Structure formats: structure tokens, C-alpha cells
Image 1 (spheres, rainbow, N blue to C red):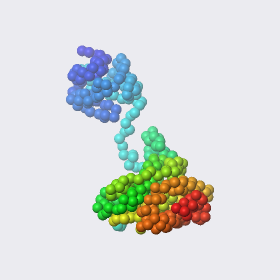
Image 2: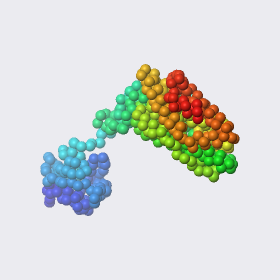
Image 3: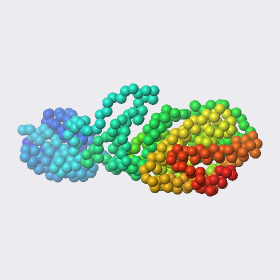
Image 4: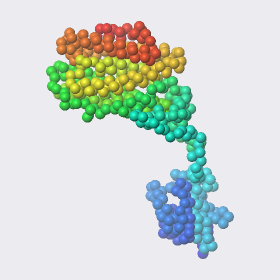
Length: 453
């Protein structure tokens, strides 16, 4: 009869050769197997099946085994190699020198490396708040603001976690805490708006589908010069919103989990802008025309170059959104029911974008007296670059003249009215955001393209 040490050596040899029939001859009928992460099984058939299911070929563990050693009544064999590092194999035997227990553990002594935590219910006892069951949902339903009640609705001035700890959850122990995420924004004043949760709900409820919620069949043939003019305007809008969309998307990963209302709202704005890109591109291609000429792009590059989130909001949620909203509200540009629906849906989206921009600027400015000067600097930069675009964008200027009026003179007059409406929308938006008297300190070049469009 072979000794226990010899049986252990045979076990290792059979295991390495993947000779599971030979290995089975070494096992007692009531053998038990314990493996890290795989748990425990018992019985010769079940243990044999579990061993057979281990990876083979190129995926098999690359292990170097030591000679078996006695460990009391048991036999211990150690191994090292990929992918586990040190391993410990302990075999127990019955009187017939058959293996009754196979205990495989990670670590040279069976205690190092990863060990599954013991099963218990301690996680259910964490001291997170247990709010009462909500009721009286009302017509708006179970909104984010109603869900985030009590401590769950409190966003701290500084978020302390670099990983994905949800606000209101209990942080894991250090050993199990996730690795840092790519967040760079941890201070509330840099991104916060009190209305973010409500705007998120509005954005979800008021979403629209350009493919089916615009009466594309209502578009009638237009004079070639009018259709070309409209298509140039639509091209301009689609290009502008594409730029705003792709830059805003990149900022979402910068905002830490503590301000999830803001990130959720911004996701709807990203979707809104994508919808505008889609819808106005479709309109330019829907009536026998086509896309027009690319914009000069000075403002695009300014948006790309925003160093701070609030700076970006000044460009896309305040300056751009106010100008585009005034254009969408103009009664002379739409030539069909489809055009009116398109501009109407877009205007509704832009009102939410402006509302977020206003609330964010108010919060940012209240945080520190120096922040108002930062905002005015960013606004001046945006005005200068928008002026550079408008002054050089001859295709857009001529397209607006042809699209707004029945004659060139009427078109010029209405373009002047449009520019004044855009300026007033911009100034009034800033007043709502606690940025007063901006009209008195506009960048001169910006003032000129408004007064002499």
C-alpha cells in the first residue's frame, strides 16, 4: 500500500497531467473538496466533476509544486506561479490511505492572498438612513427630489470620496473600497444648481422624437433661394449644437458622485443637444436642399478651451442658448408646420438649459465674491469669439436676410430685430443669474455685430 506522501505525489502528477480518471482512484467515496472562490463540494463524483472543470490547455494555471510534506496527520504540498501566486494544498486521508479532504487555499500557508469573507448579514446593519415609505406622489409621480429625502438629499460643500460611493451609502472598509475614479470636481459650488433634480424630471417628461413628432410631410417646396437660406441656418444650428454636445459629454466624468442630480440633469441636456443635431440636419435634407457652409468656428474653439465647468456653462447654457432661443422664437423664419414644431420643441429644451445655467451661476457667484469677476471674464471671452464668428459668417448673415424677409430690405430690418432680441434674451438671462448691467460692459466688437448685423 502506498504511503500518504506517495499518494499526494500521485495526486499532483495526475492533476498536472489532467488525468482525472487516475486521480479518481485516489479519492474516498465521501471525499470533500474546498477551493477558494469556488466553495465546497463533497462526494467522489461531485469532486471529480469540479476538478475536471478547471481550465486546461493554455488557460491552465502555470504552477510549480514542491515535494509533499507531512503536516500532522495530513500531507501538505505548496505551489507558486500564475495566476494565483502562492498556493497551499492540504490532503487528509482515511485508514486505507484514500484522500478524504482536499483543501486548496491561496497563500503559502493557506492564509495569504484573497480569501472570501465569511458569510454574514453585517452589511444589513450599516447606519444609513431608513426613510419612511413615500406616499402622496401626485401627478408627477415618484420624482428624484421625493426619493432623495432626508440625508439622501443633502449634497455637502465638498465631496470626500474619490471613488463611486453613492451619496447616502455607507463607505466600504478600506480593504474593499473601490479604486479612485477619474473625478476632478469635488466642490459643490463648481457644478451645483438647486433646480437640477427638477430639470432632470422635466427633461425626461418633455423629450421628443424628431422622426415622428415633426410633421415632415407638411414641408412644401420653396423658392430655391429661400430653401438654400433655411438650410444654411439649419446647418449652423446643427453644427453649433454638435460642438456643445460633444464637449459637455466629456465633462460628465469629471463630476464626482456626490452631485448626482447635476450629472443626471446634464445627461438630459446632452441628449437634447444630440436631438437638435439630428433634427436640424434632417430638416436641411428634407426639402430638396442640402447642408450649407461650415461656420468660422471661433466660438467652437472657445468651448473646447473651457478650463472650468462654470466657464463652459457661460458659453453653452448662457450665451449660445439665449441667442439660439431668441432665434427659435422668431416668427418669420419657419415656413411650414414642421419648421414651427421643430423650433417649438427646441425652444422648450433651451428654456431648461437656460434655467440650469441661471441657477448654477447664482450658486457659483454666491460662493465667493471673486467669482463674479470670473464670470464676467468668461462672458467677455465668449462675446468676443461669438462676435468674431458673426462678423465673418457671411453665409449665415445672407441666409438670415433671405429667410426672414420677403425682400432684402425687409430681411435686413428683421435681422436687426433678431439681433436685438438675442441681446435682450442674453442680458435678461444674466440678470436672472445675478449678473447685472452686463449691457453696459459688453465687448465692443460684440456690441457692433448686434447694432450693425
